[in-house]
Length: 190
Image (tube, rainbow, N blue to C red; front, side):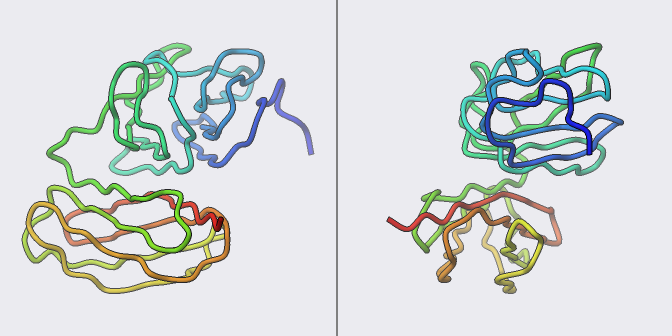
């Protein structure tokens, strides 16, 4: 095993290979000696980060959908743009990347309260009336903890997750006929 030059200065929660680069998300501020503010990428020789400003809270999840990298977490802002916990990366121009807000007309989810002891609400925005899907909760190793069929209402729908989970980070996937949505939750007993 070989260390990546410089590493990061705090926890890493998500790694994803995309367009030949290793994308890293977490709660770190420094990657390989550069200011990275919770998101950076490694191109096999150097570290680089976004040109849109820092991510203002932890990044927990990354996924590629339709050839675009999405990041999710408990952040609200990237730079001065309110991204409401999800953002997308457009490309890697030279040594920096651009992360922008996901358009509000796209189907999206928000989870609250997060962290929570055991009960979470999931708001699904901009979904078609009667859209059905499967909601899954998995641990970080990919083991499914909970799976249930759901039917959503037009506009916004709220789904309650009432399930006893041990403390930790869990991945949420909501696969519908209209969209594939991913997020994460933190269970934290007081």
